[in-house]
Length: 247
Image (cartoon, rainbow, N blue to C red):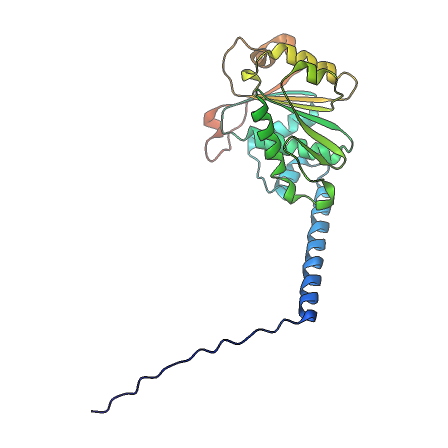
């Protein structure tokens, strides 16, 4: 019987050569691709300037449901909007995109974000910040935890303190979770005072809770007839999320 000789393989590690010319060309290619991507993003924003629904889908990568499209339409056509939506229905993400689109199309405006607590308000600013990487880098400054500047417009978080709001000049106000905000009437009066000199928009969002609240009156009382109301139940917010909102 013939024995086979066992073969032994020896791996030789070869040093890789780093050439300056190759690195320069690679860096130039990356710069060219980055510039092309920035140009493409800027073109998409210009194309969707008057088409907020397209802005959500083509710029933010956010496919809107039927009831979210209706809220976008209400915000575009009216100065006072109340969104009475169930939880996990996408109201915060929808309004975040709306404020970002407004800031991009109205340079120099001042947008306020207010919530039932300072923590909740800062969380909404963070939601808006998550959309920023989809915008051209030159269109916004480095975001902060409580404020961001987009196209020379400011989106800023404010504590739910009437004295803090009253001295401001605001073009858009987003008041989140109105039904769970303490001293809601005093805060609302201060908001109205801050918007008297501007062609402002006011959007408030909340989940329904008790009837002894300002938000319930915004949605149901005839004295708040200037508010256009969007109502979404939990059945409408479930998959495949194509139900129509009550407007």
